[in-house]
Image 1: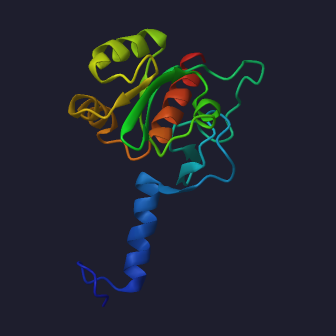
Image 2 (image 1 turned 60 degrees about the horizontal axis):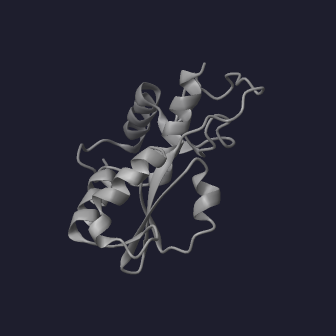
Image 3 (image 1 turned 45 degrees about the vertical axis):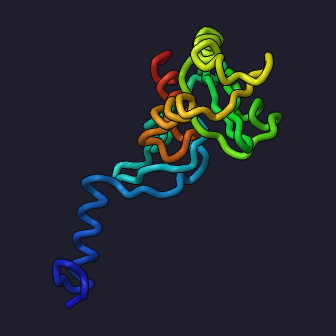
Length: 168
C-alpha cells in the first residue's frame, strides 16, 4: 500500500493515472510549437495532441496562404514605480524594445481602448508620455485584468488561436 490519500498500491495508481489521462488528457510539452499560435504547451489524448493555448489539433491543416491573425492588445508594463499603457498588434516585438521589469497584463483592444485608458488614468500620467504613476486606481485596474491569469502571454496566445479559428 502507498502512503497516498487512497491507500492504493503502485499498480492500481498506474491504472488510475492511465484512465485519467485517457479521460481528461495529460498536459505536457507539444512535440513542436503550435502552428496556429506558437505555444509549446499541449494536452495529449489517446487520439492525439491539442494545443493547450488555442485548442488547435496538432496535425490539422492550416491555410498557410493566410497571414497570421491580427490581435490588437493594450499592454501594461511595470518599471519601478511606474506603469506604461501602450498598444500593439505585435507584442513580442514591441515589448522587446521597451525597458521594463514586468509584463503586468494584456487587455484586448486597439488605439481606441488605449486612449480610453490614458484618459481614465490621466491624473497619474507622467507628462505627455505613456507612463503613469502606479496609483491605487491603476493598480486595481491591472489587478482586475490579470485576475485568474497566471501568464499574460498564454492569454495572448489563446486570443491568437481564437482569431485563427474564427477565420476558418
